[in-house]
Image (cartoon, rainbow, N blue to C red; front, side, top):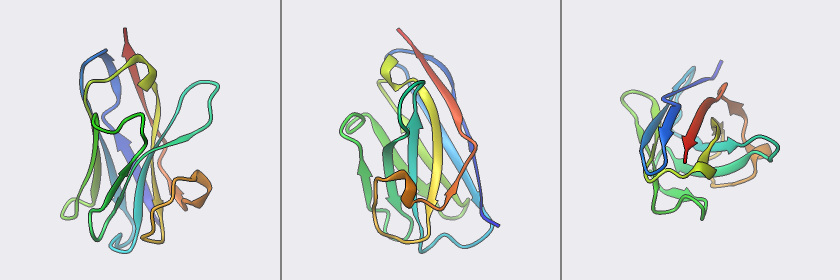
Length: 124
């Protein structure tokens, strides 16, 4: 059974940084695509960043490009989202997701497994 557990959320001032972690377990993820999504109150869940586990090819939403960095540590089976220069509009619950295909997609319904989410709040 695949499990994804996020951590690292919290309260930060605008301009600050946070690093989110997603610990993945239950099987080998070498053929998976891993994504970070976020959902703000009253809004749809949106794609933030993604990484192909096997090749570390990455993709980002335009709103976070240049500020956020996704990476993975195969030895720890963990995916990270380094978030710098945070803005109040980055406030949301952040979710880790896994797709059983290595192809990049940005649609949330294409992902097969989800974590429980971690709250990020950026104050102005």
